[in-house]
Amino acid sequence: MEAVKKLKEGYKKFLDGYYLEHIDTFNDLVENGQHPKTLLISCSDSRVDPSIIMQIGPGEIFAVRNVGNLVPPYEKDTHHHGVSSALEYGVKVLKVENIMIMGHAHCGAIQAAIDTENNKEALGTDFVHHWIGMVHNTFENPGCCAESIKAGHRIPEEIEKASIVNSMNNLMEFGFIKERVENKTLKIYGLHFDIESGTLTAFDRKTGEFGPL
Image 1 (cartoon, rainbow, N blue to C red):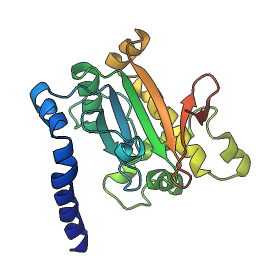
Image 2: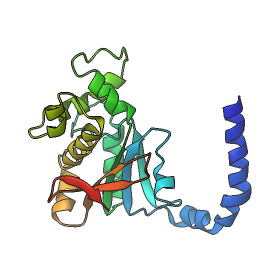
Image 3: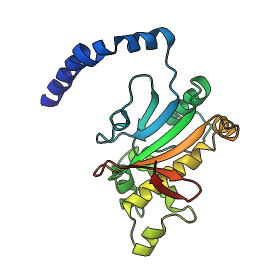
């Protein structure tokens, strides 16, 4: 119950403090709707909150959080597609100008993918092992994970970054995204956050490496 109590206390502070201080912003968002410029896909990990990391307020990002900050490949079927629906809404309805995928160090989803590479049922889950199968696909990409191959074992940070790039590539399978990228009205970014140092790096397609923003 202590955790719930803390949340209640936090809400009270928000209502009496932040909300009142930004009441005009909230009213504007109600009256005029949201017009975020960026759709940001990040991990559900409790240690990685994009609003805190990037110091952004209400209405500034259209946020998608999932296990491992993964973007699935385009699949048109009758299954439920949460991430794909968010992409479609963000790009076609909200007309965002940027899509950012933000991965992070010490990602549990990436570690789980590494641990189950040779036994995909080892987690004993109904859903998670299927979801992180997208990371297993990353292992099969040509040129992926050179340092891991050299070391003889998967290096988590390298896989975290390779998975971000894989998700960036998956974005281009969506026709409504590819069209706008080619028309230069939409940009795609890959970011990696290091929890220990607070460092945020970005993927550079020219060099194929992550470096300073």
